Length: 235
Image 1 (cartoon, helix red, strand yellow):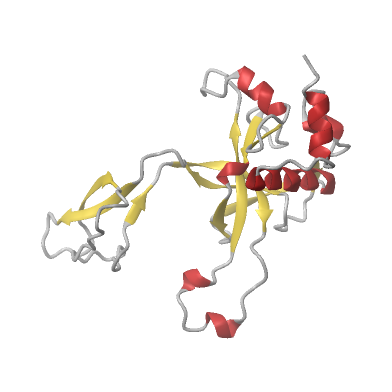
Image 2 (tube, helix red, strand yellow):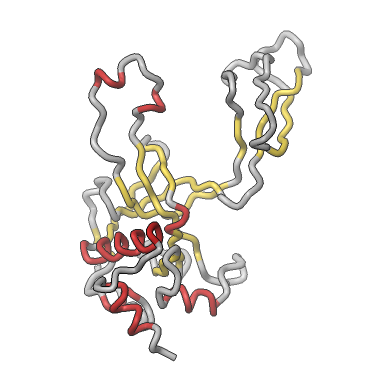
């Protein structure tokens, strides 16, 4: 698809950033909508405290309390249908929101059946690795991001942030947080596949920026270095 990007963005230097793709197959660079938890929130746990009806195993009273890593996990012995408890585990509670995400990895090759048979499901269940996008606009309905901060992100000052205008409506500007890379389920009920994906050139830049973030070093002969030098010259 054709989009017009401002000259103070990395996308301005790329012929095509987002491509329309109605095949709706999951691939690297694919745009999805998924539930994304807030990572800055205080962790909470859901704890069963008792019953209003002692013989009713389908209902229980719960409380939400702070989850502390240095506090011994005490598995409740209160049986509740549909909410089983397991030794050493807690039921965590998170705030979150459905957001656009960019697929960074499709999760690697499938695991042979003989390695899955009899093992816990979490050991081999397939996942995707995604980077979430956050609306940056200050439009009265959202706090948004400080314009001066967005300006610096746009010019590739930080490896953990990538500015963009997503081709799906909604906020005019978005910030993709590469430091929020996270695994998500491939369950079709948990994701919505959108008809857009990054072009090969855009995906190469994304990969280069992730390498910059994870290693702390920016390739001297890379595309980002070249574009960044041009962007930082702008007033």
